[in-house]
Length: 93
Image 1 (cartoon, rainbow, N blue to C red):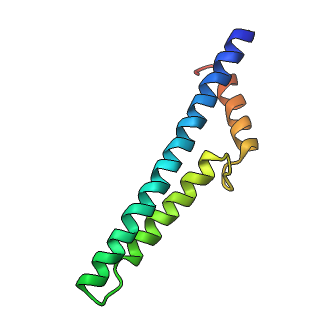
Image 2 (image 1 turned 90 degrees about the horizontal axis):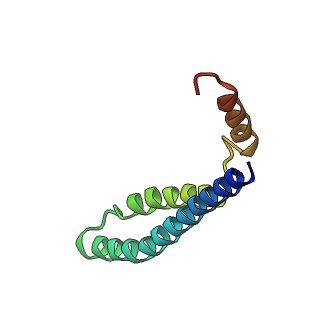
């Protein structure tokens, strides 16, 4: 049983590291791409269309960061634990 617990902890930690890495990569790309879009916007038109990708990607970046750090206002740790126990106790699982 201890082996399964250690393996499960390892798999969970690996997924967390992957999520954090994805957040960092997305943040770096955001810092590179959005200024380029703003520059293109400034050079081509007076309508500030670059605001839309900046806000959309920014919102996605915030959500990704929250997920990577275990912050979930809708489905917190308590909900996850209850759902895990519910699924494990389900005979069809």
